[in-house]
Length: 317
Image: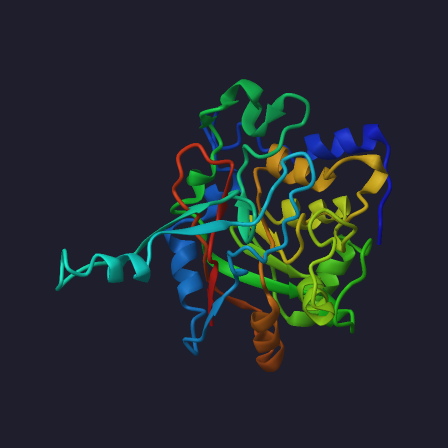
């Protein structure tokens, strides 16, 4: 359900879940600190069948971005620097060897991606009291997505809220709150704890595929998480949360704020956010055998100073 709140109530929520200084004044990875060798080893023990699932959307020119909005994000532009025609034309130069080459122009948050802790500000501050001065035209000097390079691996937990709700997909504006997440987890027979990676399925990608068009998937009204879901996620110290929607927060946003859960998680709690993760095939397999936790590997690209990163998350069951 949707939750409305006053500015004072919201400010209190931000302070309640603020992790600034918890891992020291130099910390740049937040609750990803809870991912350690022991938690990874426990997650590896979840592999039973060896089935591997890619949770990434294709990176191509047919993706969800429209070029609208404050950033003007567009889909990946992929070009061949050298193709088969070039090889055929120059075959006489190197008759026994030649090759192809390509390049891309890519908004790092155009498709399946992580939001870095440097992605969102509340006023002029981001996670751990860093400020706007720490993100310049050269990139993020602190809280960049590269902090996840060796931390985005561990126990993944799928909460298939759409299937638990008995529908193929949740409708735009449907808000998922803490009560929903607790009841869904109980129905799935899983407990969420410190250092876990929680993946939440709304079914919005199933809706996109059913209608055969992205339409307003990027930036339009959408199902998603209520600000109230912070009690579930922050209270359990999850390492990160990812969803199958464009922006994680329910849209329209609650109480007239812009992406209020982003501010709670990224700025205050230090919980990384994943967006546009394709959970459809994984969810079907979890429903088939009733197991909703698995080994997850989802490292970002190590682009220095990046405030987000495309990735190909892998779930192994």
